[in-house]
Length: 392
Ligand code: ATP
Ligand code: MG
Image 1 (tube, rainbow, N blue to C red):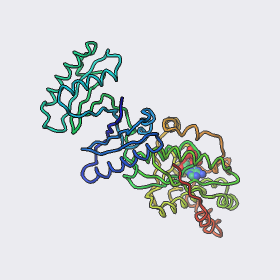
Image 2: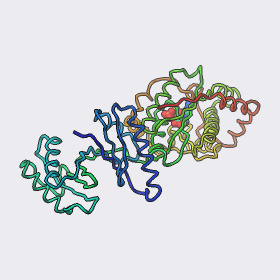
Image 3: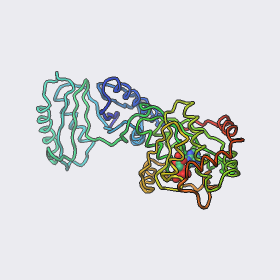
Image 4: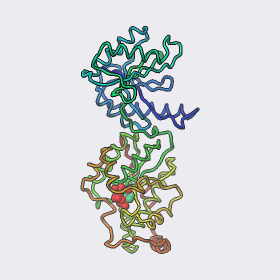
């Protein structure tokens, strides 16, 4: 029965010029999200509202699922839009709407009329009372409850009239593209895809970089990262994923530095390379899936040692999350099943039995001097030979 959806979005902080940008970005993200859905849609902006209208046959459920991935959407209201042809016709439309939508009428309701144009002959209060009466006459099983109704029958009087009684929750957040761009360090684990999702939710467009170590990490491990990027892209929009061949750098560190410092030094090189790409492509920060104390390389001391090599801010949206909380988000967004596929990860291959948990910056810097002969050239080669994959 529904051919259209009324999209509700948060309005705080989007006054003036920002509002226009916010709405334009939201429309663009809705278009992107609906691309894979069968059917044609028209998306229009009208008086602070966004409408998604199906132009022919379409799959209601699938459309809804895709709209639920668009950040910035607070509520999705399946809506019936009718012409204003007088009050009698409106009353008939409302009754027919309720009849189709709610086959079982044993419920309480309240009518909520809003006039976006003041030239409508009835005021909101009068319309509420008159429509309420008509509904009670048509469906004696229904009862009015003005405090806690089972359904709120919304009537919005605009150029046309909107009827709706359901507000399905959207993901909230801000439309991707309204808050700059960040570079996500994406591994095949559970955490980093969740970190990317959370930053994108704040309106940040994301690019990603993955450090691949063939032959120690397989093609399957790389494919898994691409698959994760694709799932995150359902929410974040297309992701440009750089795949960096990290093997030589990793081997060189392994040969030249104390093994218990390997992870920290490796992570410092990942950050340096990620920052290079960030700068080149206009990102304003790095994003990782770290959380304090999760592993040896995520103690406060280790995080400080990784940060030391970055000029850009490093965003760690999971910093205060427990693993269970991260897993809950990854299940909700659909990355969990892919993340737990058991392929090797470049960090696990060379890990020391007893990695340092409180690295001293002085010691780490000194160890890195053992790399001075070849490391700059290796970093340069890794940057130049990186492959770019568009995940969407
Ligand atoms: P994840 O589940 O995200 O893999 P993790 O608990 O395995 O996290 P680490 O391996 O210590 O943690 O990595 C911490 C963060 O460093 C990751 O969340 C990710 O942002 C980044 N990272 C680690 N390995 C890689 C890699 N091979 N390529 C890109 N980024 C990586
Ligand atoms: Mg990992």
